[in-house]
Length: 250
Image 1: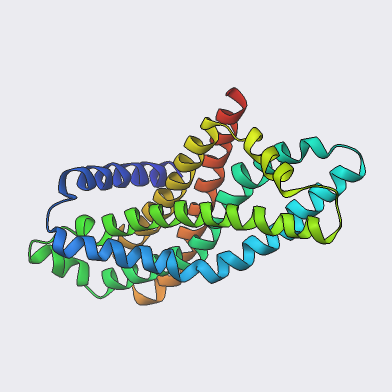
Image 2: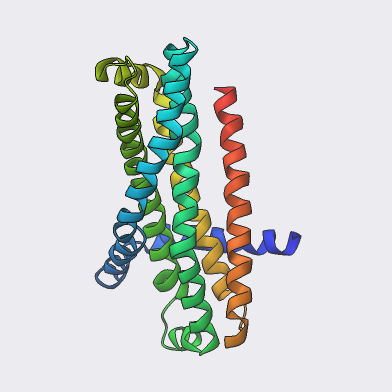
């Protein structure tokens, strides 16, 4: 575990350094790769995120508001929704979906490239693999998770009110969104952005590290992918716990 943490830390620092110093280098080649990564890990996942947002709104928000009104605690609906959906479920669910659909693909692509010697070929012709292979995936995944999380939260809040409306709960749209607005503060927006971007960077860095850390055989790709998924989940949970502490302090 100590060696893995040390390796991930060093890899993350190298990636951040390359991103800062070489972001505009070979922009005509690298920036389209970033756009392609955003399309792959963001736009393509919109149908699935839409379905999950609708289900999350019905299951969590709708039932929560309905039960709170039954016990006469409807005034706390906004606070509960912000705490459960905006701060916790929205970012974490989105990150796990991106990990399952995109993170695994990153590991398989990079580990296969390493196994077939493509990474060494890039180095032989003077191309930095971190700049060409890692940086676009890190930036694209971070931007995608941020955008998808905002989309999921908005769709979940809207679909949740639809369930409330169907259940004939005496809660007007203006009152519903007023409770949400009153429960949201400036720190919520800042921490939501930091949290989602951190999830995206961690997932991309862990999956890229596992794909490039060592030469592998083709039959070892599945094992490397499993390790990357497990480590990414653990890292996201640890990050989430740290942000919970920040929320409690603030």
